Each structure stands twice: as structure tokens, then as C-alpha cells.
Image (tube, rainbow, N blue to C red; front, side, top):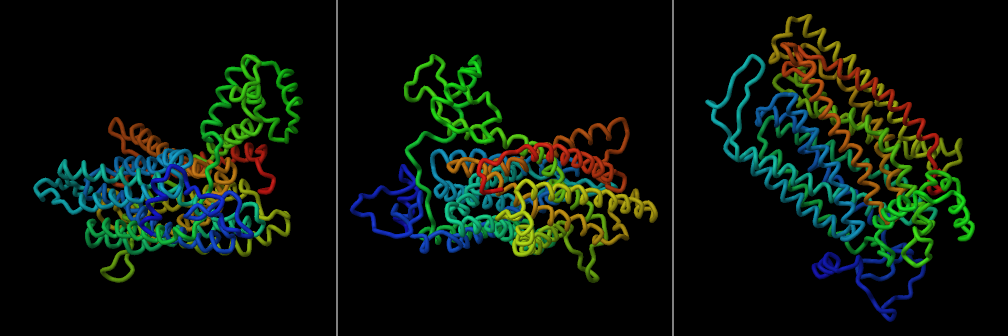
Length: 583
């Protein structure tokens, strides 16, 4: 296996070239794919669910590692790092945003240069290194008690500068590793199913559902066990276990090497370059008349489909600036259509950002709410507030089989579509559920503030409010159901609606929605905190949440989400899929 991995990792192409004499006579091979030795692959002996199980297992282990940090990060920042609630929320959102934006870089490197397999291996090594250093930072000696300041709201300590530097360096090193790992693993998993085979095509759609099922499985273990260890034992062990989990993920991925299907990289130009030159050529030909474009289309004998009527200014790339016809001076019709496909994704991407902003609150302010409430299960045992995120994963785990095995077959009978409902319809349903979740969150927060006022606890942040933390379960649960529709729908949509060679980039575009959404959430929180907390006023996000107004913030997010849905429906209605088979 060692020699095989070295060949795969360091070869200039995705595969080992072999001579015609070495090519076995295999029936029912998969077009465009080879095995780890560069030979044509047999459909029954490679890929499919056999390979997908390895990759889903890797995702479970990786999500255990990732959520082992992200789900309880705000508690570490407000505790060991001594940051205020607003500052911690901003830092969590900034880091989360970075982890979701960096996949654009990782996907570009994978699709244009390294290939998905090698990118996954390299990113996994960086991931493990980041987690190892993070564990070390948590084990360093902390500030002495004399460095801590007691206030009426909390006890805050200032950690040593070295510890802070190492912590944030390792934290963003994890983000870098995740940026190469996340989009490539999912795209590599979907590549194990042949879209040209009817049965495997349906299995690929199901793969996205069960992929998210595995993701939620890893998350459940994290927030139900690991967060308890972090809150009640120590953070060194709490960060060390994710490191071990990521090592296991790398080993499992390597074990599946011989069963994977590897896409062949063709001789055509780099896909990113192909699309980029279309825009450059269109700008150069901006003065070209419509009649000249129509004549060129007629000369080439192309038959534009419905999508070709959109963004017709890109058709100017079909002509050379000087009217020459030399090879390389003009763009092909297929290249122009690829560029149009990317532009069509823009409005869907933009109108999904509000969902990402709302989702960012589940690991920050929802958790801080839970800390103030009654979390006792038995005398002397309190569940960690961050463990309530388990209900998001539980709701998703229970909803995915219902969606895949019941909802889709029933919907298929009405719509006559292989996947039941379109991907955009699925995304829209989840967005609507998220609005309901935010309305419920606002109502629950109003109830929590009323209870604090009723019992005279407004100025006593360290006293538990006599209101069960179970009041937060409905909003977490609704987010879990919404994710099954919106998150899984976005994954499949951005994988399916980009050129085949750019599917890692497509999935990174999906991830960037949540990255940019986290950045926007960070900016929104900072702006509101500054606007509402100045001139002696109490901020909506006061460290003492009993004096703050998270309910106002939740109502604002619910209203903005409602506007988002209207805009999303407008663009979704006019969207033209680039492959008729998906609708």
C-alpha cells in the first residue's frame, strides 16, 4: 500500500499511465474513471456504496473532530481565554467563516492541480497537526489566580500571551486543513457513483442524504460526550480526543484506496481557466453587435437551449476581437455555457446567506442562553449547555430516513421526478422552517427574561434561572429538520450544477455560504453591540444576558429571513437547470 500511495500522491497526473498491452479486457467499465493503478475499473468491483461507506465513516470521524472544537468554542473563549460574550461570539463566527471560505482555495487546488485524493491526504496531515498544537495550547500552564478578576458578572482571567498565540495559530491551522478536506471528501464520495448509470444516479442522490446522516452521527457523539469532558474534566483531553479522531479518519480513508474510482483528468484546458477566458473574451468583444453573434451561432450550427437565452452578453466570447478564427482565439459554445452556469448560481448563493447567519447562532447565543437556565438532570449533575446541539443532529438523523424512504417516493408519485422534488424546492422548504425556528427562539428568550425578572434575577447572572433548558429543544429540533432540506439540498445543488471537473469547487461554493454567513453574523453582532451598548446603555449582547435583549436580535433575524425567502423564490422560479435530468 505504501508504494501505491506514493505513486498516487506524487505523480504529475491523477493516474499512472499504462500501455495498451497492460489494459485488461474488462466488460462494463466506468467511463472516465480508473482504479488506483490507472487501469479501467469494473463497475461491480469498485466505487458505489462499497467505497462510499469508507468515505462516510471518514466524515463521521472528521465531524467529531471539527465539532469537538466549534460546538463549545464560545465556552472556552469566555472561560479560559477570558473574553466577553460579544467578543467571543465575534471570534467564533470569524473562525467558522474562515473554515467555510478556505474550501474555495482547497477545491481550486484539487480540481486544477493536485486532484481530490492527494488533496485529502495532505489536508488531513495539516488537520492533525493543527489539532495536536491546539491540544498542547490547552495543556500549557494558565494564569495564576492573582491574574483573575472577580466581577459581579463573571470571573475572568487573562491567559499568557504565548498560550493565546499558540491557540489561535493552531485554531486557524485546523481551519486550513478543514479547507482542503471538506469539499474534496464529499466530492470524492459522490464521484464513486456513475451519473450515466440510472441506478447509480439515483444512489448518488441518496448518498447526499446518508452523507449528512453520517455527519450528524459524528456530531451527536461530540456534543453529548466530548462537551461534557471539556466542561467538567479538562480542555486538554477535550481537544486531544478530536486529534485522535482525525488520525483515525486518515487511516480509514487510506484503507479504502484500492476500492475507489479515480476520475481521469483530460487533456483539455484547466476548467477555471476555460471559464475565466470566457469573461475576458466577452469584455473584449463588448462592442460586438447582436447580429454578428447570431450569425456566428448559425455558422457553427449550434442549437441553443433555454439556458442560452440567459446572459447573452457572454455569447460575445464566441467571436475573436479581430475576427480571426485561429485556434485558441475564440471560446467554444460549451465553454460559454459553463460560464453561464456559474453566473446562474450567484443569486441562489446570495439568497442563501441569511440562512447561514441564522444557523451561526446555534453554536453561540443558543449555548449562552442554555448556560443561564436549569440544566439539572439529577441532583449534582448538569448537562453542558452546548450538548443541546445534539437535538439538531438527532432531528436530522431521524428525518433523513423519513425523507429518503418515505417523502421522496411519495413525492415522486405526484411530481414524476426521480428525486421527488427539485433541489431548489428542497432548499426553500428548509429556509421556511428556519424562520419558524427563529420565531420560537425569540418567544422562548422573552419567556426567559420574564422569568428572570419575576424572580428578581436580573442583576444576578450567576444564579440559575428557574426555567428548564428543555424550552430550547424545539428551536434546536426545527433547525435539525431544516438542515435536512436546506443543507443537503445546497450540497447536491452546488455539486450537480457545475462542470464535472469543478465539483470540488461547487461544494466549496456551498460551504462558502456558511463562511460568508458567519462573517456577516460577526459583523452584525459587532455593529449591534456598538450601537446598543454606547452612552451608558446596555447592549443586546450584554455579558449578563438577563440585562440584554437577545429576543430583539432573534426577531430581527426572523424578519430578515422572511425577506430572504421572498428573494429566493423569485430567483428559484427563473432558474434554469443545466441538466434536465435533475428536474
